[in-house]
Length: 344
Image 1 (tube, one colour):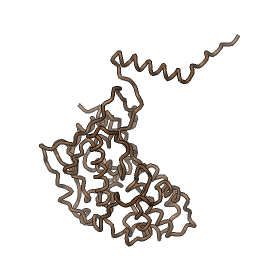
Image 2 (cartoon, rainbow, N blue to C red; image 1 turned 135 degrees about the vertical axis):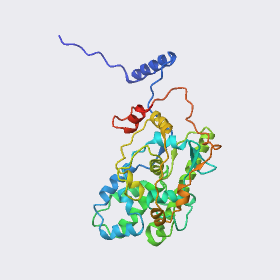
Image 3 (cartoon, one colour; image 1 turned 180 degrees about the horizontal axis):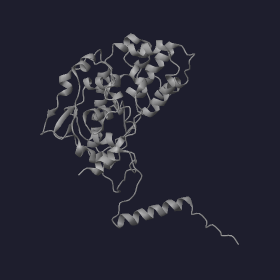
Image 4 (cartoon, rainbow, N blue to C red; image 1 turned 180 degrees about the vertical axis):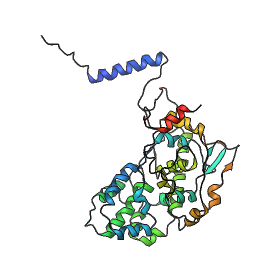
């Protein structure tokens, strides 16, 4: 006579049992194991961006590539597939000081400048600035643009490839929005390479991000959910890597500077390890005059690390919760977690 498998508990009962266990653990003083919840979220997924352009580079010819070089955007065809690293970026945001538009770390003010964005991205810091965020959002949806670029092939005309690339770059990497909308001016810029070249994209990206940093800070002050942060959020990760000697670049001589970190795309942080990391930070600057001048950047402004002991970051702390939220387990391949564990 065979064994009879016990009847499975109803699905709702399984969850009720888990809830009862959590309640007993909470009453006994043990932490309640909850799924990790991101304090802030971004629509800028560079891993998706990377996959799309791995296919895109196979269908473009030398003429298209040369156009991208002339527009100073060819480097983005190689943009590394960084993980979002939300726990780390959230910790960095805690050091934001809205009044001085910079990060206050260990008593030092690190200003977030257009010159730095220029060095990180290879986009020249010169030209006209546009108020990208206040332009009417009547352009095509970023999701539709993403579909459009994946439908291109070798037979697509070069003008269409160039236009679609620019539209995708602006809508999905530089200025992605939570609602997927795009500014009305997007199409005219993508259709006119002279107009594209006349714009100071380094300043546009920097100012857009500063507004987003300020918005997040204000939400915290008003005890509102943070929700999404718009814009080129992964750029903050590259800024962090360049400023602090916690990691070594895989390609130290590559330029623009985001290419120096091409081999660091598997970085992984839990909220706990990201918090601990800031106890061991050391500042690192190694910008040359030649590099700065080539992009119209001010070397003195970049290297001006101000000591401001009276300054403090904005009031920025994780929202209080009745339950203790735990982070996902760290990756076994994370050198950052290992180095923290071995530190005194």
